[in-house]
Length: 418
Image (tube, rainbow, N blue to C red; front, side, top):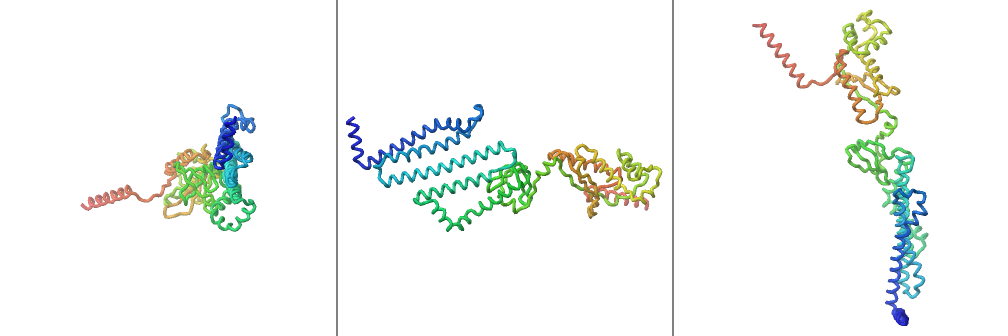
């Protein structure tokens, strides 16, 4: 016992040794407190905050929160033990308190950042609006937490009131506005995009000017991430969605119908009035007789002459338009409760455009393309029954046939001369 008293007296008599020994005790106390927290805080957090969860459900929130909480205990322990060490030099005492204060607010900001991240993840999993994102608001909250922590750290380091630090920021407000101009613009854009529901997670958007067409997979404060149709990723500044034009296809997906608006071009010289020979040829297509009966007000086609069709303005294109409209209405892949229109457009040097306007009953891209292709393949095949021709520019085969016809005519003329 006398030996221990001698060592204690020796240490207390040497200022440097006493300060070193006190620092060693503080470090040991902080490490012990940290180890204890690692073992016990997890169980406490699970029991207090997550007792409602089933034990078999794997949870990582309690571990993450407990790790952040365990950082506070060593700092608080060291700060509390300082009052039992009055013999420490004043400058060392101030330095340790300052370090403890800085670490406290650093860990506090990390703790609230973790809480905000957990809130974001929980909202994404449990919210009824699965396609709505609050990630932008969470990031704004993180920025505010870090700013407040930085102000408190500056106040501790300068030994001034936080109010004085905040009031002094007014002098550098212009500089801060310049530095954070993109963040402020992104914040305003994110709030408008989220509050107005003009863009949500899972929406398929298209920005032709940027060559972007894909699904929105992330809405952050500064950028919006899009997975394109070829699985590439594009990140667009949030503010661009307020200044640039883009198309959101989500309304189309929600409606359950996808529009077909496509034209084919007819050779205008193939359009003429119906005659009896044409009626016999068109009647071979199922469903044409019903449309002819409607156009003729129930008259028998064999009881009228060719002149009657001309006087009543019934052309082969008229019959074809009515037939095609009825044929589209009978298809299972076309919506009957939406517009079904077959119309002739303004003539052009490319021929007479005839536009198909209708809606498919499936919004899936592959099924939509199959339906559209099947419709136009049938149109190209059945046009001949109505004495109509598709217009297209002359190709090599057309020129070859023309040359063959010309050479054959020359040979015939030469043979007659001989």
